[in-house]
Length: 571
Image: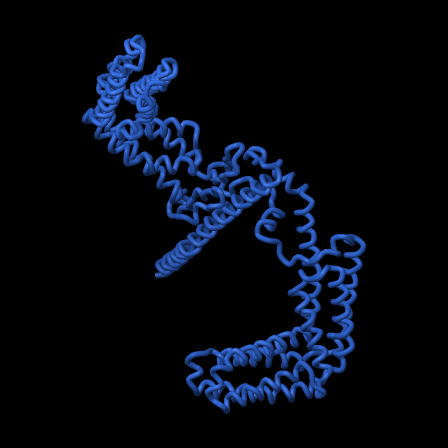
């Protein structure tokens, strides 16, 4: 019985441990994944903004292997560093103001003042509803008259003065970007001096009595409003209730404050502010004559924090990798791209396409390209050397048109698909950027399936039709030349474009059919499946087993930024 009890207890402990892991570990993994993604995209944005900042100054970009030069440039930029320093000095002052406002007696006055302001605003804004009810409108006007006394009254003038200087401190902090920093420190000192005069004389009893009367009036007003249809169109009752409760809490704190202790705190903060002022004029005299900066704009904020850690992806699953930077010299377009999984992706694409890398049709198509291009050049050469433009404008235009068509077979589906496949296979040998490969994959996947069927059936009907089209147009050219008596006889005898075309075409169509191996069709299909699988991983992440076989951590490519467009925002 005892042994069974022990085993049962052990099983309970094991069950609890497993349950804890099932709950805790997935959450931990999820946080890690999200942190890597967030940092990764912040890093890309930092590089992108830094590159554009550098470009705006120099009309050049910096390659990925020289990002240290980019960092040195930004760190040496005096205007940017000046903004950073002013921002830091501003925060020194605003932090000092916060410490003043955190003194208990002042921190009690702040919610009272803010709530009174909010109540005044709500009462004014909702006047259009109150006007339907004369008694409510009268009560509203009475309350506003009572609230105005907190700004100035002979019943408690010292409290009103103290409240005014607390308000001034808070306003100065919020609008410090409108004043130069030296003057701001002097204003803070002046406000503290005034508070030291008025706080000892604050009429706590009179203020509390007056507030209780006002509190009761507002409460009655709220009840009256909530009994009318105003409550269905406005939340004024709920908001007023929140404001008077917050003000009431402030008033309670004010009553409990030890004024002597608070005045000692205020004295210490006055000395601290004096120290800030001396620091400003002795160490940063010129800088602190400028207006404060509460917050740098988004780009400047990124640039002043730019550092070497931004160069590398935080996900080291594939090793420590720098972000990819791609641009074309002389142009202002740039791409900053996550390196995550791209080496693996490129290797998988190479492996997937290796069986179709050297299809027999490729060299034959290259031969056809060369022959037709040379024929087009030959047409242009004959046109120029024989000065055919002198005899017929129509002939000239026809030759130009045909020459261009001979060099562009993109309208022929078989040719276009085969050429696209060759371009894709060649590209992945040296290119790993997903921003470059993604559109190629999207363009080639359906054509690969169509091309597979064409190879199996040895179908090049559309290419044969295009050759017949060329033969017909060339025959027309020869006829135009032969029948134009303005053209010298020796020129007419010398020009034979049809023979030139037949020589260029040769046996290329028969050779192409011979090179089409039906077995290559299945190779293309298998390659397509493998490409889809690899693309799915790069888009959705690779799952790495962690903590044994029960959990996995997802590693993702975090996308890219191209000309200001973030790929993850378009997904």
